Length: 413
Ligand code: ADP
Image (cartoon, rainbow, N blue to C red; front, side, top):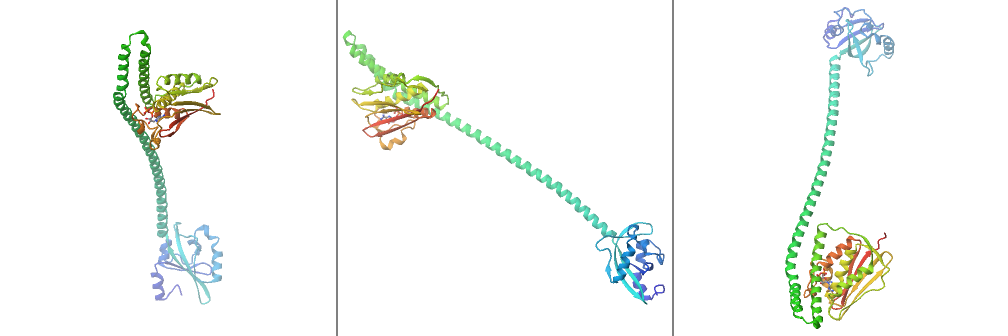
């Protein structure tokens, strides 16, 4: 039947674009169409009566009869390969990928199997190329991702460096600003000093001049009292001017950061006697300073000059801001880890509304303006004391008096 063929069957058989190969139950080829012959590289009719094995790569040949028998046994139409890649082998030995479908059928009691075979070399090649392209793409993506990560990390580093740079510049800017501010304050100070000097120095200087002139008039020996009175006035005014100058020098040194504290070990009574002795010169008539006598045993370790400056300032203020015939009490309390100096007067007091400003530089309370002064002394005292780990505070009542307290830590050798 296959050799003679019927026309319609032959036309369909030969026209099919898939390769068609029919084998009998012994796996001998009994028919093949043109597409199959060309696919496997044979001439027309050359495959007839050849075993199917010649179209199967050697490595699959051993298992093929087993599969074939199994297939015949179930006898149903199906796709070959079960997901594995199938290959055909050409006459010249070349192998090529195929897809094959198997269709068993019976004619006159004999079983045949028709295979529909498609050469999938091009599809496979395309798939391979796609896979290769994909791999290439993946590789490129990986490279790009790595490059991107590197760029990001570089950018992050750059950002960090920039932030550091900005911080450094800000710091430098702040330092310059602070230096400029300091310079400005020093300039203001100098201006202030000049204007204060012209005001504050005039009165004491003319007082000194008057006293010198007057003292010069007392030429007789028994007029020593009168001369002495004028000399005391001169001494007190010189002392006052000296204090103002010292205050200004202190500010200048504090502002320009030139203060170096010098700690020494000294006898407290020596400092107190000196401070009180100097203050006595400025006492008004009837004023008296009461101060501790039993302090010979107290040895302090501190900056002696600064302590002297602070206590002199407080004692001078107590005298300056108290009327005649009043008592100034200077007391010392020694505690476990600190020493407290208390200077109490019965003077004009500090008005409540001015109290919070009293340590501000150049600040002077309303009721103090009739007295000479610069508003510097307390400000300097506070800065120095805080630098030395101590503090200063006060209690005051208008028209009743003021007590100033100075605390300093006790430093062990
Ligand atoms: P100055 O005495 O040169 O004005 P200070 O800095 O020593 O400067 O004092 C600042 C201000 O504090 C004074 O002007 C005054 O108003 C007030 N003051 C200081 N001590 C006393 C005191 N013992 N009694 C009343 N007022 C005082």
